[in-house]
Each structure stands twice: as C-alpha cells, then as structure tokens.
Length: 253
Image (tube, rainbow, N blue to C red; front, side, top):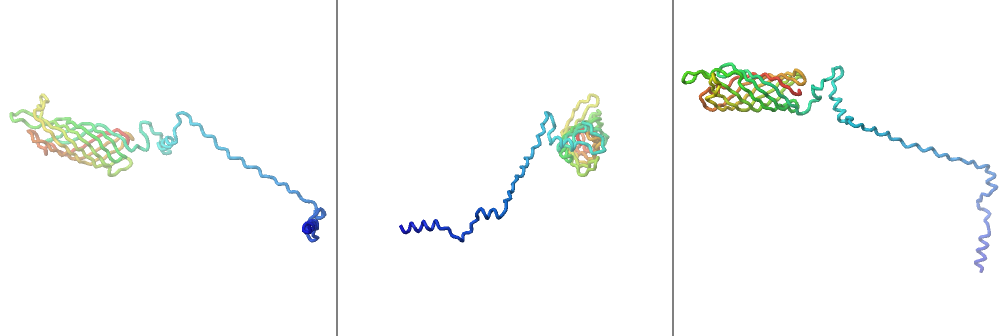
C-alpha cells in the first residue's frame, strides 16, 4: 500500500524545471509562416519519330549505296546502261574474234578464230581459244611430183596476267597451252591424205588498250612451239614460228 501511494504522488507531481513550450510561448514567437511546396511539372516523355513506311518496290539501303557508287563523278556525263556497273564485279567475262599472223614452213600464214574466258579482279584472265588456218600454204611436191599444201588448226587454254597498268592500257604476260593437228592436202580437192597430232605451247606478252568500257583491243607477240608426231609432212621446227595476235574483246573492262 505504501508503494502504491508513492507512485501516485510521483505521477501527479510536475517538476518545475521542465522546459515546456505552452500556448503563451507560441504567441510570443509571432505568427507561423506557412511555406507552400509546389511540385515541378513532370517532363513529357520524348515522342518517337514514326517509322517511314516502306513502299513496295523501293530500293533497299544497300542498293541505294551501290547506286550512289555507280553514279559518274561530278562534271562527267551520265553513263549509258550498256556500259555496265561501276565498280566492276570481281568476276567478269570477255570474248571476241582473233586474228593471228604467223608463218608455216617459212611461208606467211594467217589464222582466224575465237577466244573468250573470265577475268578475276581485272588482273588474271582464264579462258580458251580455237584457231584455223585461213590460207593453207604450199608444202612442195609429193614423191610422184604432185603439188601438196599444208593445213593446220589448234586450240587450247589461254592465260593472261596483268603485270602493269594505266588508266587505259594493260601490260600482260600471256600464253596458250593446247593441241591440234596438221594435214597435207590435195590442193584440187582439199582432202587430206596425211595427218599428224601436235602439242602447242605459245608464250608471249600482250598490250590491252581499252577503247570503251565494254570494248578492248588486245595486241600480242609470242612464239609458237610445236611438238608433232613423226609424219611425211613438215617437222615440228618447221611448224613453229613467231606469232602476232590481234583480238577485239567485248566484256566489262
């Protein structure tokens, strides 16, 4: 009981030294200034640009870049479509007629034919050619005194490598490796009564002059080496001779 009375007195008693702020202290301090807090307006989210619709048949970005490369430099006239694309593809083709001036059995001979192939990076050309003798040459007389003439044709693989070039001219090392045949003919009937097979190797050098983006003149000098089977006609040495080539090439140059 004594403990309970003591607790009641302790609660009711208010200490005089407590720092208490009452209504009088608030009035003495003056009016309270109320600060209004204004929230900043939120920034609107950036609007995405609407995607441009792709029209049917419109060129792709890659095609547009290639078209820009194909346009001629400023100041030059537009290129015709038949000139082909620029820059040139890595693999292009060529072909055309060939005229070869040479000799057979110490007589002048001319051969005509066709040649064509592929060019890799405008540097290396691989192809094939076939040539026929335009004017069969006299080959003396037979054992019985009849006149006879010599006819030759051959073909093979051709290779050309550009070793130096300018804007319009290419200098090449080139050659032909192949085979063919020769025959002795009756000049009156044109029939062959003696034949032989032969291996042909023709190394040389060339000069290619670009006349237009799709036309080129190819000039060449070389020597025809022949290895023929033994027969009644001229020897391998007589079948070989210096050669001069003229070719009109059509392609992308």
